[in-house]
Image (cartoon, rainbow, N blue to C red; front, side, top):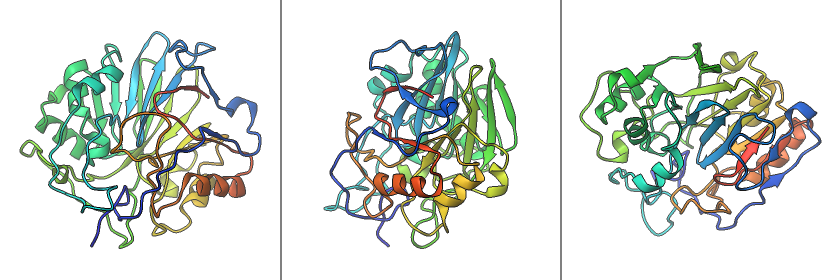
Length: 328
């Protein structure tokens, strides 16, 4: 079986870049997204939370007077062959951390910083141990996250295992943990499936980081808005019922194995005012704007935008650029 991006099915990689903002019908005023000017204060225009996309499904959330929250921070870019039509995907690719780049964007998150991990595939987790050990941040994730973090040097006191259903308070920032599901490839399966039920030996390759079950998170800063974060393109309706976020960070599907994924998700989330596509970029290229579309044979951002407009015409689609401050 040949393996490719995110859903781990090889496809041709589109080489074009995308327009930063694609707006659907007007969203309700309270849920409309506005991009702050580059270089703006990290406190944002109105003293509210500021969100920066770190690529893949990664985000940084900065809140005035409080430590930052990170979601799936993956900033190191290295080649596995995932996007390269001239070579095979290499499951034995060695894990590496670009400490300079990671530190540049995470070292100042502040005492009491939090890292939320949706699952432990390398493009979501492999930078997390470095961030935790250099900043003292608390790592929140599955039992597999808990065990792998310790295997990679994170003190047990900095690791918080969760299952879904928890409602956590981090200095006034409320984090609802949601049991979720990982994307399915064309064989209706998951690459690097499995869990870690105890602390293993130190991982050395990307194959040493299994999916480890998948979570989603709804984060509500003290001043709002409520934002739903996904790390993979599947979910369970019963688990997201009643969340009704203002903003949804939606992972794009790479296959059609999950039935009516986008329409079902938007309905289950009660059609958020703002929808932001994530996990669509070529995450083995430099972290530089404009991002390069890495969807290959999966759903493109343009296709996703058209689908959102059709099934949730009151939602606005905001296509993010790397490290750009957004307020919602």
